Length: 266
Image (cartoon, rainbow, N blue to C red):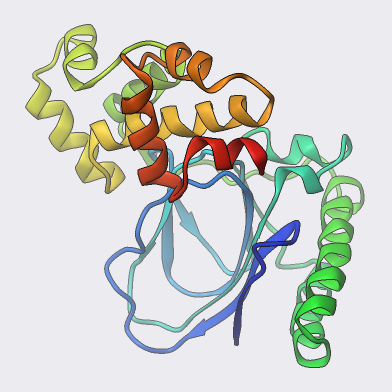
């Protein structure tokens, strides 16, 4: 079992986790700016991606695009094993970028070659130093992505959501459609014709995050991509409905741990 952070490389996190101890009720929900691949080897788990609920089976492969809020929900104390790969969008090319246009889950239980590819991460971790492990893992990840894109038989049998709350999905859709507006819990409650407290309670119960916190973090992520594409900091703050730059600055720094100027240079 290993867990390796590689913040200075295109592939920034690689883990092979095997957990035989009781798992917590849920793992903390989170956003990130990177793409993520989860390969479930074993375990009785569910997964929530932006409000849609999935039951995962052994050898389900989960492709999570940047800015998708997600968290794992253990359903029993049975052993859990998985691989997680977290990597920069820049690692993708025109052939593989479409794999992360939306969250996708499909089962690869019969694909022994893909199983062996993931097993190579363990071999590389045992053989190489940190630098060579990062480089070789980057090459291996590119091969895995190309294999998924071209070699796995099509059409893929996509795993549909098991369940979703229609009201929560409306809220998520409204936030996505109005991300550049000055939206908050009051605005959404008024637009959807529900009380604010009811919306906040049902959203947090389903998503494991407060409604206003979700809005704030979605806005900051969208602003972050604009900053990296060269939009000025003041223009970004205005674009996403912040009343002033200082308010934007505080939320950005709370989320990323550094100032927007540092984000601009990354």
